[in-house]
Image (cartoon, rainbow, N blue to C red; front, side):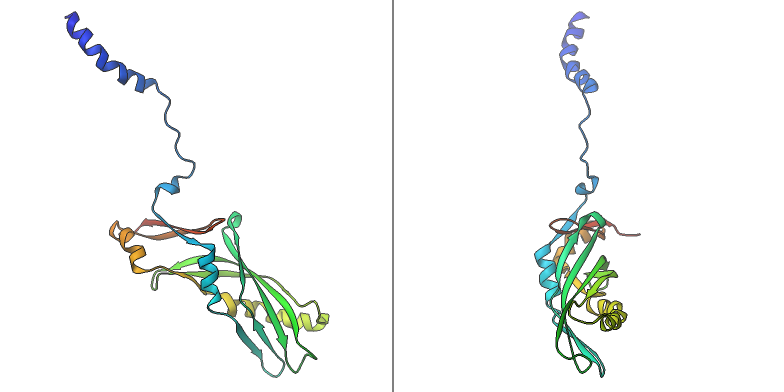
Length: 193
Protein backbone atom coordinates (compact mmCIF):
# COMPACT_ATOMS: atom_id res chain seq x y z
CA UNK A 1 0.00 0.00 0.00
CA UNK A 2 2.81 2.40 0.84
CA UNK A 3 4.45 1.51 -2.44
CA UNK A 4 1.44 2.91 -4.36
CA UNK A 5 1.57 6.10 -2.29
CA UNK A 6 5.27 6.63 -2.99
CA UNK A 7 4.81 5.90 -6.71
CA UNK A 8 1.92 8.39 -7.06
CA UNK A 9 3.51 11.16 -4.97
CA UNK A 10 6.16 12.24 -7.57
CA UNK A 11 3.42 12.46 -10.20
CA UNK A 12 1.24 14.73 -8.04
CA UNK A 13 3.96 17.15 -6.92
CA UNK A 14 4.10 19.11 -10.22
CA UNK A 15 0.31 19.41 -10.19
CA UNK A 16 0.32 20.80 -6.66
CA UNK A 17 2.91 23.41 -7.69
CA UNK A 18 0.65 24.51 -10.54
CA UNK A 19 -2.26 24.90 -8.17
CA UNK A 20 -0.28 27.32 -5.98
CA UNK A 21 1.50 29.15 -8.80
CA UNK A 22 0.74 32.78 -9.60
CA UNK A 23 -1.43 33.16 -12.70
CA UNK A 24 0.28 34.46 -15.84
CA UNK A 25 -0.46 38.15 -16.33
CA UNK A 26 -2.78 38.79 -19.24
CA UNK A 27 -1.67 41.24 -21.91
CA UNK A 28 -2.76 44.82 -21.33
CA UNK A 29 -4.41 45.04 -24.71
CA UNK A 30 -6.79 42.14 -25.28
CA UNK A 31 -7.41 43.44 -28.81
CA UNK A 32 -3.90 42.39 -29.84
CA UNK A 33 -5.07 38.78 -29.72
CA UNK A 34 -7.70 39.45 -32.38
CA UNK A 35 -6.71 39.61 -36.05
CA UNK A 36 -5.87 43.06 -37.32
CA UNK A 37 -4.58 44.86 -40.40
CA UNK A 38 -2.17 47.81 -40.34
CA UNK A 39 -1.94 50.80 -42.68
CA UNK A 40 1.15 53.00 -42.44
CA UNK A 41 1.03 56.79 -42.21
CA UNK A 42 3.02 56.96 -45.46
CA UNK A 43 0.39 54.87 -47.27
CA UNK A 44 -2.37 57.17 -45.98
CA UNK A 45 -0.45 60.26 -47.13
CA UNK A 46 0.13 58.75 -50.59
CA UNK A 47 -3.56 57.88 -50.98
CA UNK A 48 -4.82 61.34 -50.05
CA UNK A 49 -2.17 62.99 -52.25
CA UNK A 50 -3.64 61.38 -55.39
CA UNK A 51 -6.73 63.59 -55.15
CA UNK A 52 -4.96 66.96 -54.99
CA UNK A 53 -4.49 69.76 -55.98
CA UNK A 54 -8.14 70.85 -56.27
CA UNK A 55 -9.74 74.08 -57.48
CA UNK A 56 -12.96 75.49 -56.05
CA UNK A 57 -14.35 78.52 -57.87
CA UNK A 58 -16.58 81.06 -56.14
CA UNK A 59 -18.28 82.37 -59.32
CA UNK A 60 -17.45 85.98 -60.14
CA UNK A 61 -15.33 86.44 -57.01
CA UNK A 62 -12.35 84.14 -56.68
CA UNK A 63 -10.83 80.71 -57.05
CA UNK A 64 -9.58 78.66 -54.14
CA UNK A 65 -6.78 76.25 -55.04
CA UNK A 66 -6.21 73.60 -52.37
CA UNK A 67 -2.81 71.91 -52.33
CA UNK A 68 -1.91 68.40 -51.13
CA UNK A 69 -2.71 68.09 -47.41
CA UNK A 70 -0.24 67.01 -44.78
CA UNK A 71 -1.87 64.36 -42.61
CA UNK A 72 -1.42 64.25 -38.85
CA UNK A 73 -2.25 61.36 -36.54
CA UNK A 74 -4.03 62.03 -33.25
CA UNK A 75 -4.11 58.65 -31.43
CA UNK A 76 -5.32 60.20 -28.15
CA UNK A 77 -8.65 61.14 -29.76
CA UNK A 78 -8.64 58.44 -32.49
CA UNK A 79 -8.80 61.02 -35.30
CA UNK A 80 -6.68 62.29 -38.16
CA UNK A 81 -5.96 65.87 -39.06
CA UNK A 82 -5.02 67.53 -42.32
CA UNK A 83 -3.39 70.87 -43.00
CA UNK A 84 -3.61 72.25 -46.54
CA UNK A 85 -2.19 75.31 -48.23
CA UNK A 86 -4.97 77.28 -49.94
CA UNK A 87 -4.28 79.86 -52.65
CA UNK A 88 -7.01 82.47 -53.15
CA UNK A 89 -7.03 84.61 -56.30
CA UNK A 90 -9.61 86.26 -58.54
CA UNK A 91 -11.42 89.48 -59.45
CA UNK A 92 -12.45 90.21 -55.84
CA UNK A 93 -8.81 90.19 -54.70
CA UNK A 94 -6.04 92.50 -55.87
CA UNK A 95 -3.49 89.71 -55.87
CA UNK A 96 -3.02 86.07 -54.95
CA UNK A 97 -3.12 85.27 -51.22
CA UNK A 98 -1.92 82.14 -49.50
CA UNK A 99 -3.55 80.68 -46.41
CA UNK A 100 -4.06 77.42 -44.57
CA UNK A 101 -7.03 75.17 -43.98
CA UNK A 102 -6.96 72.76 -41.04
CA UNK A 103 -9.49 69.99 -40.46
CA UNK A 104 -9.84 66.99 -38.17
CA UNK A 105 -11.83 63.87 -38.98
CA UNK A 106 -12.74 60.37 -37.90
CA UNK A 107 -12.65 57.28 -40.08
CA UNK A 108 -15.17 54.69 -41.16
CA UNK A 109 -15.04 51.45 -43.13
CA UNK A 110 -17.25 51.14 -46.23
CA UNK A 111 -18.13 47.47 -46.81
CA UNK A 112 -19.40 47.98 -50.38
CA UNK A 113 -15.99 48.92 -51.81
CA UNK A 114 -13.63 47.82 -48.98
CA UNK A 115 -12.42 51.37 -48.26
CA UNK A 116 -11.44 53.41 -45.23
CA UNK A 117 -12.93 56.90 -45.61
CA UNK A 118 -12.75 60.30 -43.91
CA UNK A 119 -15.89 60.95 -41.91
CA UNK A 120 -17.25 63.40 -39.28
CA UNK A 121 -15.19 66.31 -40.60
CA UNK A 122 -14.56 69.32 -38.34
CA UNK A 123 -13.15 72.60 -39.57
CA UNK A 124 -10.44 73.71 -37.16
CA UNK A 125 -9.12 76.79 -38.90
CA UNK A 126 -9.12 78.71 -42.19
CA UNK A 127 -6.55 81.46 -42.07
CA UNK A 128 -5.28 84.03 -44.59
CA UNK A 129 -2.76 86.34 -42.88
CA UNK A 130 -2.47 88.80 -45.81
CA UNK A 131 -6.20 89.36 -46.34
CA UNK A 132 -8.30 92.04 -44.69
CA UNK A 133 -10.60 90.83 -41.89
CA UNK A 134 -13.79 91.40 -43.92
CA UNK A 135 -12.55 89.18 -46.74
CA UNK A 136 -11.41 86.53 -44.24
CA UNK A 137 -14.90 86.59 -42.67
CA UNK A 138 -16.40 86.05 -46.15
CA UNK A 139 -14.03 83.15 -46.81
CA UNK A 140 -14.85 81.65 -43.42
CA UNK A 141 -18.47 81.33 -44.52
CA UNK A 142 -17.16 79.04 -47.29
CA UNK A 143 -14.76 77.27 -44.89
CA UNK A 144 -16.99 74.39 -43.76
CA UNK A 145 -18.18 73.74 -47.33
CA UNK A 146 -14.59 73.88 -48.58
CA UNK A 147 -13.49 71.44 -45.88
CA UNK A 148 -16.30 69.02 -46.74
CA UNK A 149 -15.66 69.20 -50.47
CA UNK A 150 -11.95 68.56 -50.04
CA UNK A 151 -11.92 65.66 -47.59
CA UNK A 152 -15.38 64.35 -46.66
CA UNK A 153 -15.63 60.70 -47.68
CA UNK A 154 -12.15 60.80 -49.23
CA UNK A 155 -10.75 57.28 -49.60
CA UNK A 156 -7.66 56.95 -47.42
CA UNK A 157 -7.12 53.24 -48.01
CA UNK A 158 -8.65 50.48 -50.12
CA UNK A 159 -8.31 46.91 -48.89
CA UNK A 160 -7.59 44.32 -51.55
CA UNK A 161 -9.60 41.08 -51.77
CA UNK A 162 -6.51 39.11 -50.69
CA UNK A 163 -6.24 41.31 -47.56
CA UNK A 164 -9.69 40.12 -46.53
CA UNK A 165 -9.47 36.49 -47.71
CA UNK A 166 -8.24 34.97 -44.43
CA UNK A 167 -10.51 37.00 -42.10
CA UNK A 168 -13.46 36.31 -44.43
CA UNK A 169 -12.69 32.59 -44.28
CA UNK A 170 -12.72 32.83 -40.48
CA UNK A 171 -16.13 34.53 -40.56
CA UNK A 172 -14.75 37.96 -39.68
CA UNK A 173 -15.02 41.44 -41.17
CA UNK A 174 -13.33 44.81 -40.53
CA UNK A 175 -14.64 46.46 -37.39
CA UNK A 176 -12.77 49.00 -35.30
CA UNK A 177 -10.35 51.51 -36.82
CA UNK A 178 -7.75 52.75 -34.37
CA UNK A 179 -5.37 55.63 -35.06
CA UNK A 180 -1.86 54.87 -33.76
CA UNK A 181 1.44 56.75 -33.86
CA UNK A 182 2.43 54.70 -36.93
CA UNK A 183 -0.84 54.82 -38.89
CA UNK A 184 -4.04 52.80 -38.56
CA UNK A 185 -4.90 49.43 -37.08
CA UNK A 186 -8.07 47.88 -38.44
CA UNK A 187 -9.50 45.25 -36.12
CA UNK A 188 -11.67 42.38 -37.28
CA UNK A 189 -14.90 41.31 -35.62
CA UNK A 190 -17.19 38.33 -36.20
CA UNK A 191 -19.66 38.80 -39.03
CA UNK A 192 -23.30 39.07 -37.99
CA UNK A 193 -25.27 35.88 -38.53
